[in-house]
Image (tube, rainbow, N blue to C red; front, top):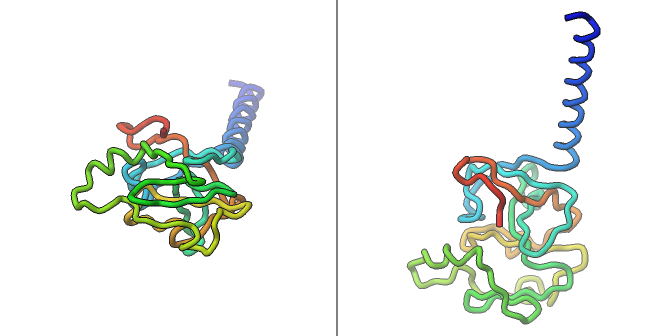
Length: 180
């Protein structure tokens, strides 16, 4: 190899590093799931890819800085968007007064054996004294509703604080794939 070829190889390598750094910094981020609050959708120790700068929609799984624990991040499911009324009655979600299915919880609910609901009754007015999710904020819940520290406890999440939208599991390999 001559000096010119070595220079080209180093240049290609540097360009690749810059591209990968840019993608990691601006497009996606790897996240490690910690805890059981998103069971069974995401389990402790899983590694996921979260996309940055995406439009957050209802039922997306998002990551954001923990408002009650600096240095930590939470992963939760978006249930309420700005302007929504949110209520749970008899383990059933109501958004803006309409019954809304949560098929991602069906299997988990079937496994419960204590005749207690997965999600206990609540509404926004009782929790926060407000009827609707305020502008610029989101109401989030963990899928494992009995143990999740979510908007019922930590309050609404500022939309601007959403770091990324979790879309893909890459580890362990038996769970490899997109998140429905």
